[in-house]
Length: 115
Image 1: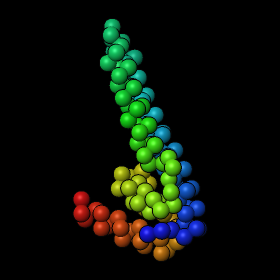
Image 2 (image 1 turned 45 degrees about the vertical axis):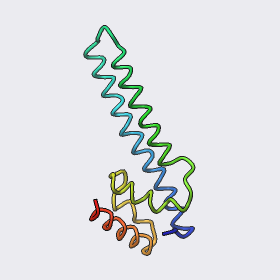
Image 3 (image 1 turned 180 degrees about the vertical axis):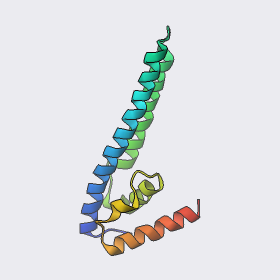
């Protein structure tokens, strides 16, 4: 489904909200890794450095795949993916048109049934 211009505008705003949620959640993960390192204070810091490096690299790849260079034709599927991974919730869809919400919910139900 391709969204209307108005729904595309709503989707862009929602993507910014979702990005901020994902950044905050991942920063907490990074913080936990650093807190573990601080409490353990190992002699060899390479493993802990690698944990941080890997977490940042993996997250950067995820963010790039999801948000960089996004085309309007991808908005619908991205919204569904965000609902499936709980980056956004159903109440976040309130500003979409009734037609868009209906199509999103139909596609979400279909994908959940086929998982």
